[in-house]
Length: 228
Image (cartoon, rainbow, N blue to C red):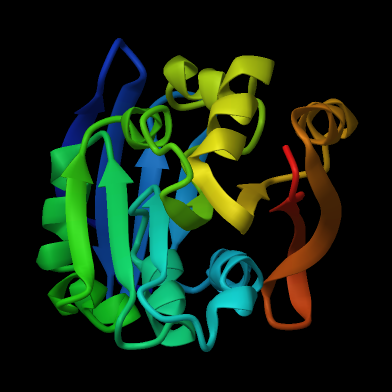
């Protein structure tokens, strides 16, 4: 078996650790320094795709839909969102780490079909929370895959997104009947409660990291209720 080749590293802000991009043949891996190890792998991305499939299902025929994708990753969430959305859609992908975006413009791009080349996409280098706190009913869908789920591991500031304050801000950022979809490594009953408290109708879906096999992940599918 061929060895892994290191292609690049990136420091996560506020001492969140070091990300490392590696390649072996046609397989890519992004890992985090320390015990967490591998975060993403180009052979296991089905659950990231399902985040977009579920979160954008209500926008198939919507005109001028506006969607935020929190977390660039390896591009699979963004690519699946673009596939699910009509040509008139506007998609903003946000990531704290410019190197991750650069990797997706470079060696990682082919994995997901180079979604950053799509004219519907705008890149925001920075905290996705900056977009959401000022959203004021602007977005039709918010898709979050910024960490390991409601208990952030790579960047502690992500915890705000899952707090009562952050969840309420996301609710306000959504248009009527808008949807929040959140990827998580596992279910979290306390987060489900916070979503409901903010006014969302919540369904938690179990998805596999590969079609029909592999680890089970959770997708929190939260729909904004009208009249709040």
